[in-house]
Image (cartoon, rainbow, N blue to C red):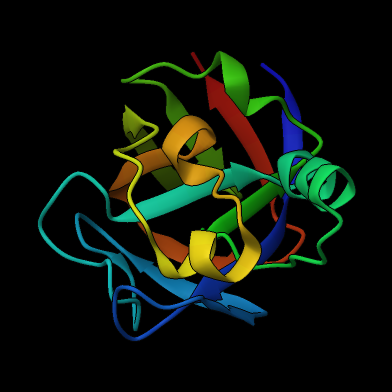
Length: 146
């Protein structure tokens, strides 16, 4: 089990927008992040992405994307998310448990691809439902069980 940390937390009140970074958020059981447009009774309540993927995209495409710019909720650093499978559990701090429900998604023209010319979620995004919520803060430890 590898250990990483929450690099950033980002939310937006509705879908189809770039997300804005916040320092902490409330994750609600089987709903998602309080105040985020993707919260609801479905399998894509929270989206996770590797910070290293954003960094590499910035270098490769000569862009300056930051937290929330790829429409992710949680940027995670220090841990390789590419080994995750559907059913993997992401443990954040002492209490939060997310279950991976989908890896990647259909690629379609979006605010992200129109803004930056590239989108990471279709290939690398981990879409999760909340098994157990709690307060998440930047810097919280993250573990994944495959």
